Length: 589
Image (cartoon, rainbow, N blue to C red; front, side, top):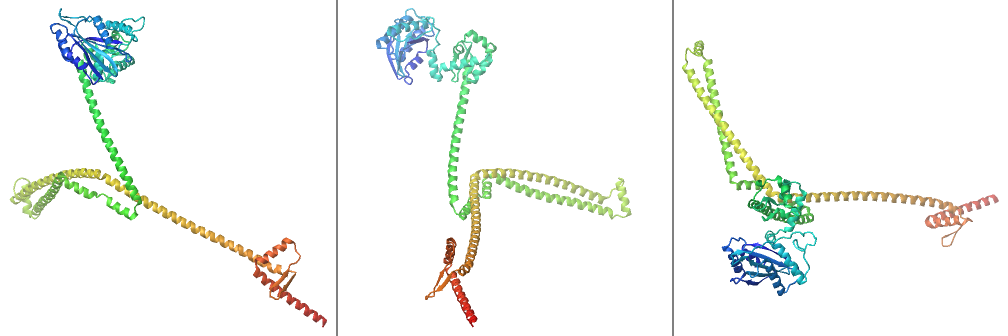
């Protein structure tokens, strides 16, 4: 069992906390004693009002009794626990409020007493309250048969002091900030052990999101990311306050911000982090939208590729012609839609016209000067001897020639006018150059905007063209392969025909060779006789069986040739026989 508590003020805030149903599964007011209020808020305000006539700044004592999660108390045991704690703290008979909470299935009780002794009009002391809490907890554990919880003040029995648990105020602070005090302590302890000086420790805290500040009551405090303050000494495990001050001696406290300034700095950081998070969220949304758009474009491209690859080439060529963006028309439309461009174009045309006019006027003035000078030269050249004397006297300043003076005056006026016209021409040309530069800049801007706007169309057009080129190249490749196959087939046919011709020639040669042997075989026959039907009977000579079989097969393979050879041989033998007979008759004669 764990009992915690301490003095405090702010009855209204405490009432709000004890009545919270968002963090508790069940809230039930068990008792209101010694007050006229009919609900918890009224009772706590009334108890806080008891201290108005005293100098006590914390007229309330708030305690909570927490058994282990697997330990349940009966109503009688709860009453016994509250009464025992009340007696130990010296609040017997004082007004009190008793509230039971159920949080995550675990029951615990909050008790609020008034510290003000009405009869003596002073506060009841709260000294050694932590020890009293533990003494009551140990007694109740033995009485209820609960498992003992080791405390830091009583019944240590040689055991080390247990780690300090967060106070109720710290737990409330954790609820407000959403940060675990144990995790904060562990993190700051690690940073303390990783550094060897106060300035390094302060820098490590800053990198971790904390701010080292000067406290009003303590030497140093730490402001967390939520703006909550922590005593630095209580957030470093195993370090004494003296050792902490010695390590931080290289830090001038006057240079550290106070709690308010540090909270403001943390609030500013939180605001900046929130803005960055919002920007990141928007960037992520934009990236997601861009990704979806890219995927949609990719799907459309795949569909187009499938369709283009299955279209006839002439239809694909026609569609590519329709897909090509008309950049000139888009430029013209962009220029027409831009008022500044029209104004700049008109100014450029006006400046060009002014420059042309100024150039003509300057040429005219220059020509006038040249003509007057030529006139003056002719006037001087055509003077006789007397005239040259007059000009000599005029050059010496003795005489003045009126006509010459008039010509020089006209030349001077014409020269001044020509100079003015040249200046006007330079100004007009500068204006024209400036107007052309401005027009060129607008042209570039409009062209850039048109190119950006038409980029998807150009990309689609180029993809379609690439598909067309691929298909044309594929058709060419197939045609080349077909032509190569045709030529190879033609070569194969030629080779086969040649082989067949050679085979036929070989067969024919073999046939002729075999046929050429037939007359020899027929001549070697033992006898040839002719039947009444006109057929021939032959008798083979005595030959080895293999040779005899070969001759018979040869005659059977070529029956016509064999028959002709047999017939010829039969005729030849008849003629021979007749000759022999006639020779015998001749010998007889």
